[in-house]
Image: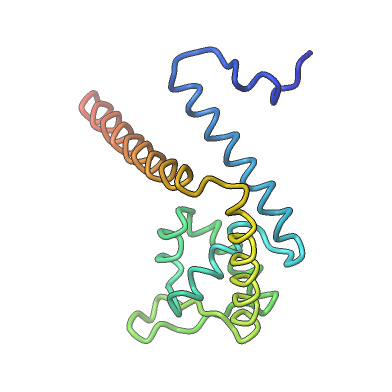
Length: 165
């Protein structure tokens, strides 16, 4: 039996299946590569994205972070609790909304954020030799269009379903 990675370019089905499957494969490869490159920090992709986001913007509420990262508040709560346990982030009461907490980097988190940024800069320099940056930017633009198409499709289906009920 052939391995899936040997036949992935031979997927059969409607064109959208091939697009969806290639996105899934890409996401898996990004995750594996990321975890390999950043393994010394004992962080996953979501952890690093959160640290970077806060590091570039000072602080966020949990809802703002969940929206920015595209994950649910419950899942984000687990991530926050994990990073709090590692003394990377801290929660402080939001002075404007007493129901919310602001998520900020600790001093240790700021130092880690700088190390992550240095690693990212180093990788960018190395990656320039191996990666087609213009191609990646075009892909990012196309993926964004695809994401918006999926949102519109979902809205259309929701409208049809609500009209039928």
